[in-house]
Each structure stands twice: as C-alpha cells, then as structure tokens.
Image (tube, rainbow, N blue to C red; front, side, top):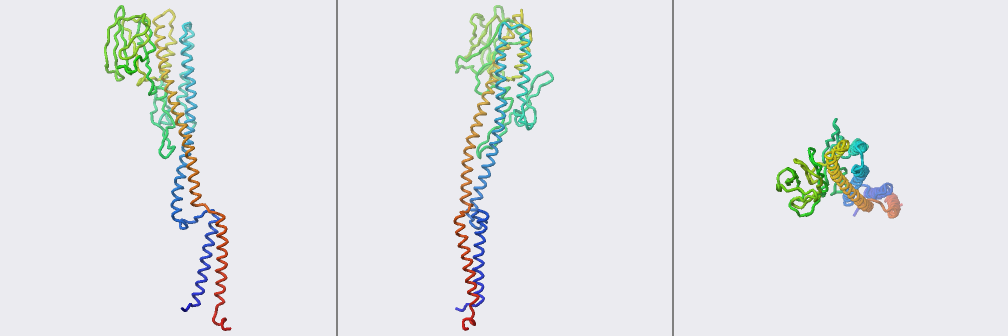
Length: 412
C-alpha cells in the first residue's frame, strides 16, 4: 500500500488537533469547575441535571413562601394575643360590674370603660401588616374590615376569603383569618347557649346559665322561647330552629315556680330562671351556633345598660342583670372563637416549621445530586491534564519525525 506524503502530513496535523481539542476541554473543565462544559459532554447527565435544578429551584421558592407565611402568621398571632388580653380585661370588668354594691355613678364610669375597650378592640380588629394590608379583611386586603357608622354601630365589610400560600408542592396554608370568624361568629365546636330577655319586660325575672342536661336530647341545638302570661304567671315554651321554623311545642301553659330557680326545657336542656316575671314577659335561650355574636354590638349594649340608672327600680336592675348575663355568654363565645383560631394558627406555624426541616433536607439532597452530575473531580482532572499535555507533546514530536521523512534524505 502506497502512502502519500500528503497523507503523512494530514495524519500528523489531525493527531495534533485532536490532542489540542482534548487538552482545551480539560482546561475548560478545570477553569469552570464543571465536568460538563456543554450538554454534549454527557447528554444523559445534562438532562438529569436540568430536572434536579428545576426541583431545587422550586424547593427554594417554596422555602421563600414559607418565610412569608411564617411572618404573616407571627404578626397575626401577636395581634390575636393582644385581642385575647383585651377580652380577658373585658371579662374582668364584666365581673366587676356584677358587684351589687356599685352605685349608678360607678356603673356609669364603668360604661365609659367598656366604650373605650370597644374602641381598643376595633383598632385591633382593623390592624394592618405594616404594608397597608388589613389582617382580618379576607381577600379585601386594602379595605378596612370593620367600619363604625356615625351612630357608633360597627359593621363588617370584608369577606371570608382565605389568603392561601403554597408552602409545599401539595400543601397550601391560610396566612390570615377573617374578622367575621373572630369577632362575630362562634367557633364550630361551641355548644353553649345565650340567654336574653326582651327589652319590654316589666317583671323582675332574671335568666342565665343554660346547660345541656342530655347531650342526646331531641332539642339540643335548637332555640327556645319562654313566654309568661296571667296572674299568677304561667309559662309557655316553644322550640324553633335557626330559620325561625317551629320544631316542637308549644308546651304549656305551666304554672311558674319561683322557688325552683331552674326551669326545665323540653328535649335535654334547662336554664336558671329566678325572680318574678310579669304578664307578657318574654325570654329566649338560643344556641350560639349560627348566632350573630358581634362583640362590638355586645359592648355597646352593655355600656348602654350600665349607663342606665337602676337605684330604686327593680325592673331596671333585672334588665341590667339580664343584659350582663347575655353579654357574658356572647363574650365567652368570642373568646372561644379567638382561642380556636389561635390554636389553628399555632398548628399552621408548626406545620411550616416541619416543612422547613423537610425542605432543608431535600435541598441538601438536590445539591448533592447536582454536585455528582456536574462538579469536577480536580484530582482526576489534574492527572488527565498532564496526560493530555504529554499526548500533545508526543503528537508534535511525531509530526516533526514525519516532516523529516523524505526519499532524498533517506538515500543521502
């Protein structure tokens, strides 16, 4: 086989070019610290690295979301802590108002205290996150959740939307709770009752402390209306649902026993009822579920009752006691609702902490896998660099030898 001189030269040049290319690739790997300078270096590893990088980026974004969620929940927790302290203050003042030795002037002063407590509660209910977003307005972050009219009545004007934040690939968490749930609605598990007397009552009867005597009673969870008529007084009891539809009764009329102190209600309930009711007096025992327990209206009604003189007027005194009993039950419902939300809030914060720990572990795993796929082994690459240099030197030396091959030189 005859090999031309041109073939000798081309073969040598090709060998040098190949060695230079391989040496350049090693240089690029060492300078970048990456095993794959281009996807062509390892197509399978490059595809895997893209998938791992995307998962790592998503994990980092979810970690950022958890930071935001934690900050929002911590701010809400601080606000609800202040709300809880204020409710404890209200309950303490309400107990103080029950002191029978207080004068009309003392109670009027206490009425002013409750008015101030209402304003403080309204300020907390309209708290913001420092960026102009209201904490308890639902989706309406820029809209004040509670608005006081010119008459002082506080109305809800937010919504009950949940501000959800994605804290894990399959988990969203609400970072705010709406004010209606906190300040106007009883918690779902609350089975207590609210007692109230009609403002037009003319007797001295006082109603309070409704309790469930039979949890399986047919009318547990229903509303009761107690009406008095005649002299001596006889009572009739009627049972309604929250829609105002008749469920049971009427039961009676039955002679009223003032010495019994408690009145049995049909279907698993009884209630404290003392004093002397008058003809036409009306009392209600209502389940807190589905009831509007607007804490601001409660404080207004309580302040108005305390500001009304009762000295020498047993009917006014009985009305004050009934208002205080009703207010106490409503405020307890508000208090339980706030505690329920705070419990939920604590559970959400704990979940975020657990997901943070899990996310950190996943992040370490992603980083390790990317390092395995992309990072360069400097020890091996340094040895490879020396080998490539030697290969290039050998190829250059071989080319020189090829250049010296000539028929004329051989025969010389």
